Amino acid sequence: SRAWHHLPVGISILTNDGLNSPLFPKVARIRSLLENCPDEPGPLFETLQNVLADSWQPSQFAPFAGSHISEEIQRSLHAICVRTPQYGTRSASIIALSPEGPPVYLHADGTPGRVPFEDISHAVRKLEQARRV
Image (cartoon, rainbow, N blue to C red; front, side):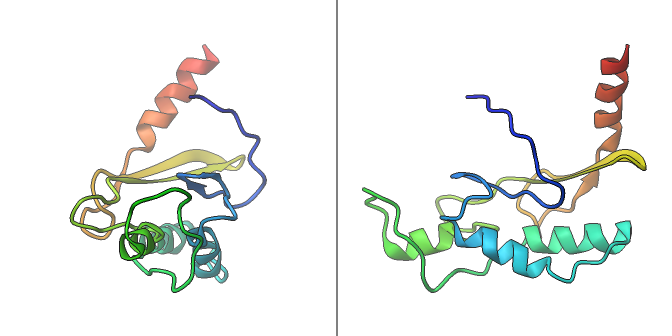
């Protein structure tokens, strides 16, 4: 289903549980990895790509309610980049919006860290131009 959110200034993290979910350890992990994130676009986007490829798994987490999935698999599902034999992160996107410049859209059409991010900002710019007409 479709949901509209007014995003706060800064970083928003979308998990399977929702936007900036406090129930997912990966939200806190992402925030900690970005704590000293560079401001310059090149290093910033490189850092974001590395964060999206991060496969750290928490030692503690809230089990999924009513799940028959083993604790080991549940732990792996709490990674930023999920890699299990049965299930995993299929793609990743980085979208940067700024009033000072054009939008940036980087996309990895596959598992981050294994598939490179491509700059597809032109697609966002085309949508933005069409909206202005």
